[in-house]
Image (tube, rainbow, N blue to C red):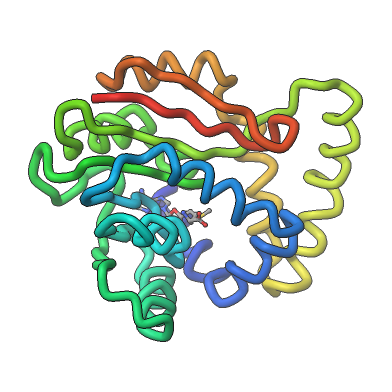
Length: 224
Ligand SMILES: C[S@@+](CC[C@H](N)C(=O)[O-])C[C@H]1O[C@@H](n2cnc3c(N)ncnc32)[C@H](O)[C@@H]1O
């Protein structure tokens, strides 16, 4: 099976418990991380790439029109249900591959991806696509896990992240392996400065980053 298809299937498999596990495993911090990342976007029309169940798009819809896009139908269905139940009118859900977005150049005021860029096969292509669909001077925002810098905190956190989290994830999602993938993919993700270079290579300018919660996650912000 191709890597892309196996990733899509993995997210389809964990989709029913995805939100619950997100909030549980991050001790509720994930809400703050998304809110912070969204606060770096301008108002207008916002594209949420790898939107999953749509939490970033929902946050963005407080001040903008949002488009939630993901290649996993099961995730998008949950996103659509959530939007319906909450009566949110200004979000559209569109099935889309992050590496080959179907939108025209310069459609959006900002594009954001939260915990998604790590999963795409060609990160440079996905970042270039986000930059392509954003208007000139629009923002490109990436929220992703990163490695904490403080050695003591890092060792405690890694015990939780690599040993405890996969166990809880496997029991609750009933999918062994899916929550082993999370720490292993984070370990393979580029260091902050390397990722900044990748964003620049993709045409994104003035890139800055913010470490949140002792550097467990990093928010990268750039301009087209
Ligand atoms: C860890 S979830 C993040 C979901 C959401 N952004 C959040 O903050 O919780 C990653 C999402 O990326 C999607 N994804 C992975 N690779 C993708 C690709 N190439 N194109 C579109 N979506 C992709 C998965 O289907 C999944 O819903």
